[in-house]
Length: 142
Image (tube, rainbow, N blue to C red):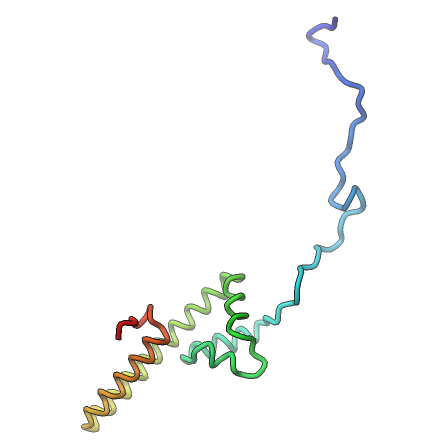
């Protein structure tokens, strides 16, 4: 029997854990590549998309321009990059506000010209377009 003060040890070889490389090999020098096709997202392209939104253009019209990805690709970028999603939402909201201001100016101009029926038509058509484009912002019940 052994004393309680003495530690009982097994004569097992000490195993060192492998380093960051595979199977104990040398460390990896670069991170593994991501799967799939590389992204076409560039800062210039993102700026062009945001500039179109600020002007009040719908995303589908922006995507029709040459060298612009599809709306589904932009939607994927928004899901993958929270900062771009925040910038996208802010630009889109600003564009909607600009469209509403333009609509208000056109209605006022028609009223000042004395053509109330035309002003009413401009307002009704404009609000329907805005409500279809942004139902959460302008209300879709019109």
